[in-house]
Image: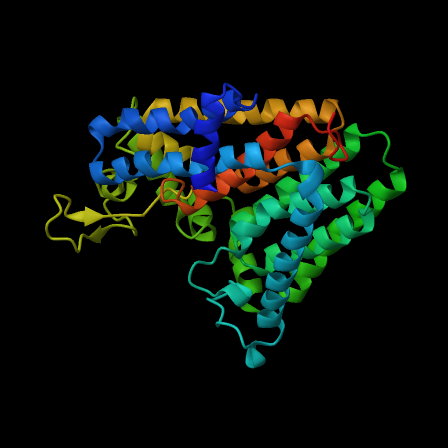
Length: 392
């Protein structure tokens, strides 16, 4: 996709036929590229910052490929079908791990994180499924398969819970908020459907919590809910596996390096200088040739704070511009009752909600996922499709 993205860009540029969405695509690219470039002079790990600057355009070109090559009128059903098969297979294997631990042919789960057929080391099941849930729900609904949309999205939400990934749990809540918002705005949906989906979602939450009791997953859930039982920084830090310390340190790094941060990708080296003396994520650096004696948490586990600590106020400005553009597309899709566009904005909100925890955006995997979803959204906006996937 990257290769053809470059090829398409050069061809359209020479023929003066660049898609209308190119301007938006370029603006979103700059939201992350410019702050990264401005962080380079003060980066604590210039090689890592340069690596991001060199590789980031490759991922952005994946988005451009989708703008030019993905036609929703032709590709929606194949996309839904293949995604459904893969997600269903992956989800069933995770349930197998959870339900039959003594007869598990898949890799062993890591603690309370059930990852299914694709292994345990990366623990990405929840992250991957988070934006797929809205795609499945709104995609099937738009082509008339409403029962499939409801049943399969409920199944995928339960898989997100089984994954043991806290970020995925938050993503499911974001998706449910988008559903209630869509039902609230769309007057054409019957009250019975709204009530039925609401009851099903509530029952899913109750059943998931009940069935997980007495299991490692239930223990993980109880640990996560400690903060709500006894609100304090200590309980939040414990329930979030040390995220409190990491986030406070991230704010400290950004505040003391306000304009351009300490360099994107350099967080692990900046962390020891700004973390508390008794920080749990401060370790001796095994690389004796490095100028840094200690390393710390690999990344902030939060996209907004990663931009702030790595690129300062310019990083915050860039990501605020992106979220403003996403919010505009969301409101416009609701106003025009465009279910497909709203579904993809919901997918991006679910996968990259600014108040959630995230993987390392400057590391590669999350950036690739980001541009796949942004590319799909821009593809639809470029073709001005209606709520059923037809050209408007």
